[in-house]
Length: 176
Image (cartoon, rainbow, N blue to C red; front, top):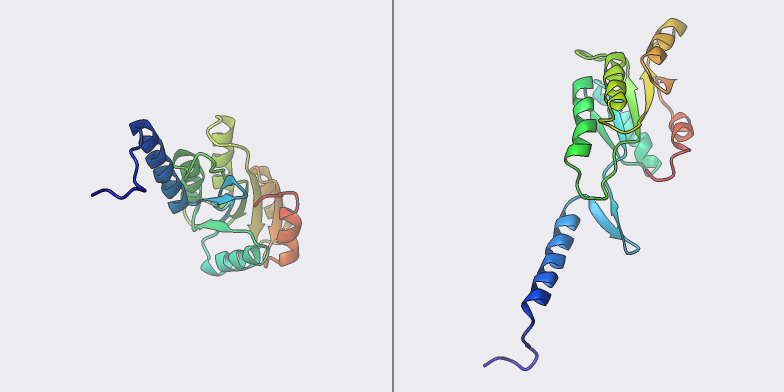
């Protein structure tokens, strides 16, 4: 015997409800979340590239204190892959690319300068959107900083980094 509450649903209504249920579960199981009736991607918009785990931890700690999530890469090749893959394999239709990259200069394999040049070349080919790249270096010499600037970074900060430096750099970005 079928309870009175159960009623026959048109096939199209059932399919629509199942699709809505499935889509909601898929989106919520990824990085997207519903906020104020809008779906918003929760993927980090900041990428930190440094071969030193301590430096990554310092960036992560400072960014977390500013309520900014970040992703990190330990070398230039991995950084380029993460930037490209964010576009290829987005978590949902609302997923946004990285907007700020903190780039170390001295890394094995692909230097920060070489990585920046490759990212800028991808941008020139319209394969990745505009990204602000902030150089971060322990070098204090004017020549080294100028050389790094010529690679295409937007500005350069010196290590050790501080909350004030990072806060000043991220100030123009409303949603990170």
